[in-house]
Image (cartoon, rainbow, N blue to C red; front, side, top):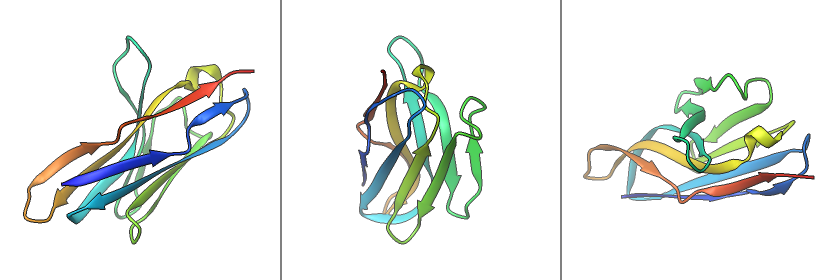
Length: 120
């Protein structure tokens, strides 16, 4: 199994910045893709940004040029640098990984979520 633990959420003023981190641990054979999704109450979970193990990235249009995703393959950690935050970015952010556990098959894994609150 693969466990994902997020950190870095919190309260920020409009226009401010936050950096989210997510560390993967457990019986990891390989992590193909890591990334971030977000969800507000009453709406489906949506992609924010993902990054492959080779560094290819995909961003939601709403966060392009403001958010940057990066990854440390040695530490099995993914980061999301969020700049110019606005109230539309306020949500619970979930870490995601598509990985193969040792002696397991490919599967999607999710963290518990970390809240980002944008308020003055």
